[in-house]
Amino acid sequence: MAVYRSKAGRKGDHVVKKLIAVFAILLFASTAGLAGAGTDVPVSGGRPLKIFLARQSNVPSVDIMKNLSEKCPNVTITAVPQKSDYMLKAVWSPDDRYRFEVVAKGGDSIYATKTVLLSNAVKDVCHFLNTRP
Figure 1 (cartoon, rainbow, N blue to C red):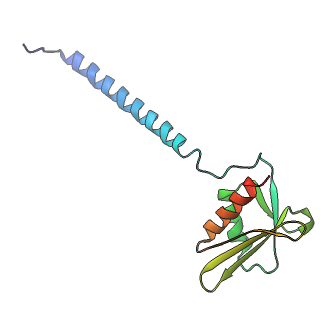
Figure 2 (spheres, rainbow, N blue to C red):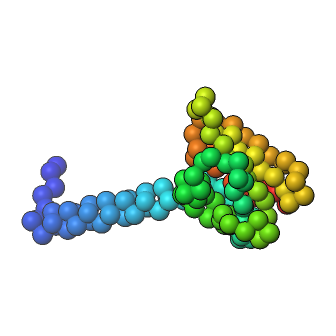
Figure 3 (cartoon, rainbow, N blue to C red):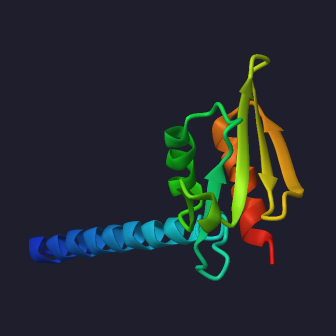
């Protein structure tokens, strides 16, 4: 037995299908936003950190700051060593490696990383600084 619907009934089905599609898109968009929520480097209690770029560094501070602002918004570069929490030696070598070293206030070297990409070196330093007590 075939069931026939009037034109008005078919138009109502079309509206329902559109509403379901819009709802599905909104649900997917909100879920996609939550999926990447835990992948960023955690900010250590919102406490701002300041680093001083060592004189031996040959990586431009602008390039470091660009990556810091993306990966580590709580870390800034200062021009005043006395106001800094750490000193950063950022050296690019001819073998296409970025060598970053974090030095504590007392002069102790406390972290070092060597990567091919500047963004990875900054990400490593950022992770170290933000997981430090």
